[in-house]
Amino acid sequence: MLADSMNLERMLERTARHHPDAVALSGRGVDGDRSYEALADRVRRLAGGFAQLGVERGDRVALLTRNHAAFVETSFALYRLGASKVPLNSMLTPREHDMLVDDADAKLLVTEASFADHCEQMEASPRATVVVGDGERIPETWGENAHAYDSLLDADPTDRPADVSLDDPCAVMYTSGTTGRPKGVQHTHGTWLSTALALGDALDQAEGEVTLHAAPLTHGSGFLVESTVLSAGTNHLEDGFAPDRFLDAVESRGVNTVFVAPTMVYKLLDNYDGGRDTSSLKNVYYAGSPMSAARLAEGMERFGDVFVQSYGQMECPMLITLLDHEDHRRALDGESDRLASAGREVDIAHVRLVDDGGQEVPPGEPGEVVVTGPHVTPGYLNLAEKTAEAFSDEWLHTGDIGRRDDEGYLYIMDRKKDMIITGGMNVVPREVEEVVIGHDAVSNAAVIGVPDDYWGEKVSAIVEPRPDAEIDAETLAAEVETRCAESLAAYKKPKTVEIVDELPRSSYGKVLKTELREEYWEGEERRI
Image (cartoon, rainbow, N blue to C red):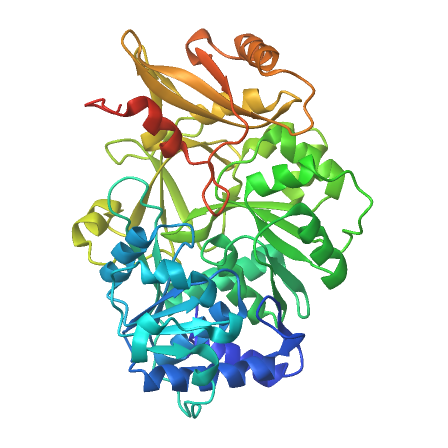
């Protein structure tokens, strides 16, 4: 239970008071290391600068940056003022950013100078723009409403933070919105703090440990910022993921925890043969989509007992279930099927699996995952109807289909909307993908349903080979077909196998199945 007097800004102040000299930030946007005392001072002054620009309690401020110290400092400055951050995915187009900035009614946009050309194409008009880095170049067309980030640090610090409660909003996180309108998921100081506390406990984060942010702060990695601050650890910021740069950071900074997408692990395994000191790693924390059991076993053999998986979504960040170190150890000791699980529910989440009528299903039977807990969103911004549709009383409907075994382990079968219906039979794409990715020459695969006059939908596998695979596309496709025929029921077997150089991915590294489907479903009146 969180104390009513606690909020995210007080969390930082408490850590700075008890650990003033501990390293808070390093990496991109930091000259050397930044202590907690220095970070707290900059946050107070930055909050004063934002206040001078008119930011008040209840306002929303958009952030369009890559991984940079300004993202962290701005977040805590807004928490201090009782305002909300609105992180923007840097991979989106100016038109898409316009939609989000307008929907959030953002009073301010904080961006990097490298996004200047991009921002000039945006039509949305926040009251002011703050520019970070690269000499803080401000385009002349932005006029007097543009301000250099460092100039805000010259402001008088806010002596007293806003009287913010746990129920006050702190963030709006937009879902990907690959079809239709993106939804702004609202979070409060209470939901965000609950997530931070639970993450710190799940990962056993300790004082002085280093968290590496190579995945975007706008996604899952960003939730580890606050859990690291809680434990007086260091947030080390990298501008994206590359295997060599990742390994350099692990060696030079003694990284203990890193959040990754499964595709980042695959890329690392495809490009690393050993010889680097990765002994400091304690948590290679993966989430966002399931990882191939075969490739996970390969990763554990290469890096040791460091993998932790959680299942969650933006509406209940990061933690619905957890597959911890012990679960992974048991998998290596012979319970290999455990690697296909998303783990068991965490202390702050209560989970049920229900049928279409809302009735709980027995162990072993598939049902929709519904969840409640102190970290669950209070709802969507400006979308009362969508909020009502997503909740049954206090239970959030995730839209995911899963089954639970007798020991309480949850197995995510697929998104409810991604189920393939072929000839009246249901096919779970993830089951087929596990078989395909088990081929030694396959790095990753996406299985989708494509329109078919006879079957309604037919199962199609789109395969990305490993970079070092010494096999031609035709042979690989044939071997994948044979492998599936040997392991799957006939109706689950892909009727087509396509080999591609690389699967399309989001900035977070998640395979964009919607983009893959678009080619096949364009012009179809009904998308099953």
